[in-house]
Image (tube, rainbow over all chains, first blue to last red; front, side):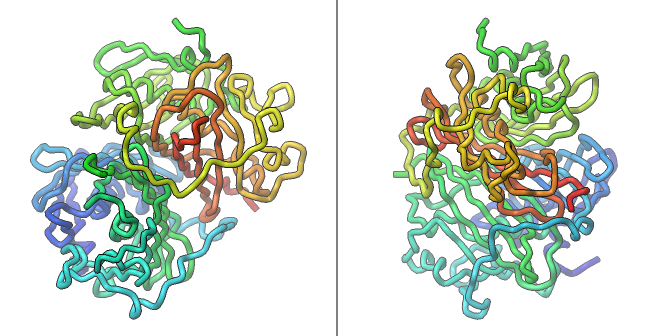
Length: 268
Length: 268
C-alpha cells in the first residue's frame, strides 16, 4: 500500500457487481464538507477500476449533497464499451443518501501524444512558487490546504486580507505533498482545489456551491508543479461558471474544466 | 398539435415507468447522421416531461452511436429531486442500440431574472442577417440547414469556397423557421447547429465527431434572432474542445456550451 495521501484517501475496493467500498477522509475538508474535486476523484477511481481504462477523458459530476467524513458506496455501470473508450456512469452515496452522480468517458491518455497540435493559449505567467502565497490552515485556510500545496499568485491573494482584486480570477501553483505524482485522477482534484473566483471578484456571497463540474483531460502531467488559472465571465440568473486550465511543468495543457455554481439567493 | 417543425420533430410520448417513445426525423440530418444537438433536445424534452421541470440548467451528453432516422426509445431516471432542481439521467436507444447517455439538472429559468449580474463579455458583433451567408442545402450545406435558419458571418464562411479564415472560430445568427420560438430545448439545438470551427481552422480533418457536449442554460431567449459564437483554443492529444455562446436579441447570454470532439487519427 502506498503512503501517498491522495492515493490512499481515494482508494476503492470492488465488492463485485459494480459496487465498490470507499470512504470520505477528513483531510479534504472545506468547512465541514468534502472538496468536490476530491469526491469526483473517488468516483473516477471506481470508474477506472470497473472499466479497465485508466484515464477519464471527459467526466461530469452533478453534486447532490455535501460529503461528510465516513464510509461511502460507489456504484458503477458501463454504458458502452468501445474499442478506444468506455462510457460509464457512477453514483456515490453515504448511508443510502446520494452525494454525487457522474457520467464519464474513459480511455488511455498515454496514447495519442504524437497527435496534431494547435494551441491558441499559453500557461499563466506566475511568480515562482516561493514568491506565491501558500494556502495554509494554520493561517485560516480550510483544512484541505494541509493536504495539498497550493500557492496563489499574490495578485489573486488579496481577498485573504480584505483586499480582493476585483477580478473574477484565481491563478497559482498546485502539487500534492511528499512528491506524490499527479495522475489524471489527481487533476480532478486540482481543478477544484483553488479558492473560488468569487472571492476576488467582490461578489456579494460567502460561497458558491457547485451544481455541476465537467473536466476534459488531455494528458498525464509531467512531474513537477502544475500551473492553474480559473476565471469567470458570466454571473447571471443566479449562476456563475468557473473555467479552469491546468498546465504541466512541460508547458502542456493537461486539463480544462468548467463548473456551474450557484450564486446563493441572498446575493444583493 | 403544433405545426412547428422543431417542437414536432422532438416530441416524446410517455409510456409510463420512465420510458418514452420518440423518433429521429429526417429533417435534422448531416451526412446520414442526426445532428447531436437535435438528439440532445429529444432527450432533454423527455427529461423535462418526466421531472416536471421545464428547463435544463446544465446538461451533458455522451455520444455513443450515430442517430439514424427511425423510432427511438428514451429512458429517464430521476437521480435526486430537490426543492428548486431535479437531477435526472436519460438514455436514447434505437432497436436496443444505445445512441446517447445524458445527465442533467432541471429547473425553472423563468425565475431568478432579478438576480445579481456581472458579465465580462459581449455578444459577437455581426453584420445584419441579410449581410451574412445563409447555410442552404440547395448550395451544398447539409440537410439540417433546410430546417433552421443559420447565417454565418462572411468572415467565417470562407471555408465554403475553399478559403478558410485560418481561425478556429465560427460566428453567426440562428433562428427556427416560421417564427417558431426558441426555448431552452431549442438552445440545445442551436449550440450544435453551426459548422465546426475545424472547417475554418485549416485542420487536416473532414469532420470532428462529438464525444461529449455540456450546455449551461441561463435563461429563456427573448423573441428574435440569436447570436452565436464558437471557438477552439486547444487541439491536442487527438481532441479539440469547441466553446459556444448564444446571446438573445436583448443582448443577454442564454447558453454557454463546450463540446469535446475527436480529431480523427488520420490527421496529418
